[in-house]
Image (cartoon, rainbow, N blue to C red; front, side, top):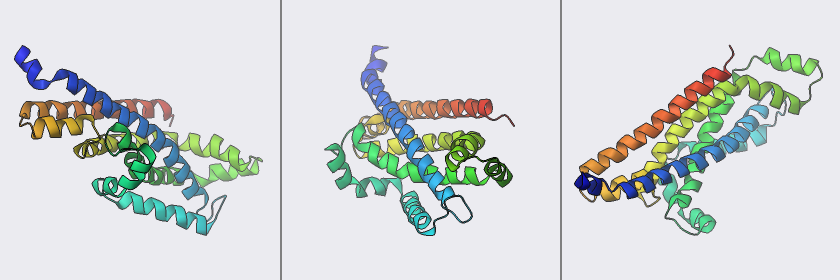
Length: 221
């Protein structure tokens, strides 16, 4: 038993798991806020919407399309100077956050935009006719109506972020990805790699379960 505990390095494994959870929770929270704002702006400034503004919409759409399309591992490398300036280091869990957020927020923004486009325009027009202001329509009509889809979207994004943390770990960001690569792959410890992979899967299943439950609770249709 002691040999197994020694082989798996439980203390280090626990620390790596906590780092992965830390990166995931922080990046998901900030991604939700930024992605929601970007998605709202994409929708509201599009043709026929309340704040129709083609130049602004084009700028936001370009930013979203560019950063949504760059492979994450390349994005990390591209953001090294920015990360070093912002965090002071390119190693550790905090150093992974800028790339995690910049890589996932545009992805979630598109999901927000799609969710908002699914709302019946008649509901928005009815709110306008009853004298609701633009901000009232946003916070009392658009977001509540799209909330089930927004929760489903952030669930998918959170799962993607877990895989991003694993990739970030390979270049020194910490977490289970870093642990599996250094201690498992380079240390020729197949068991440790397997356990780290299982832990990542468990985190993904928990996120999916929570997301499904929240969506069912929120969706009154």
